[in-house]
Image (cartoon, rainbow, N blue to C red; front, top):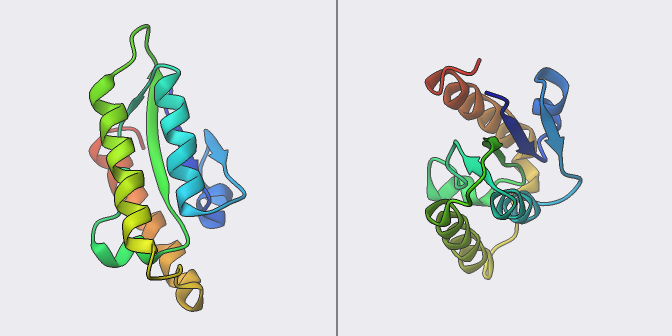
Length: 121
């Protein structure tokens, strides 16, 4: 199975293969994943972070699986809800750039865990 990691995390870009690197925000990553799902790819990892605090991260990495013939409406609904949740929470807050390096490391570790759990790594 060919998986793609959609990320804006430079740490992930440096250390892993099959990366679709986004030069943009957390929201830009979610939008790209949504676009891939509309194109028939499947969602492998959660589009939102492990906690509400992770929404303030400037970085996000999401795993999508290989392209299928049929579009998975449930996965698209998950992504649409994730984008809505992200926007709602960020209306009153900006990404925490002060701790960006820490967030990059956390995102990378969570991604590694997701890859291991999905038996991809």
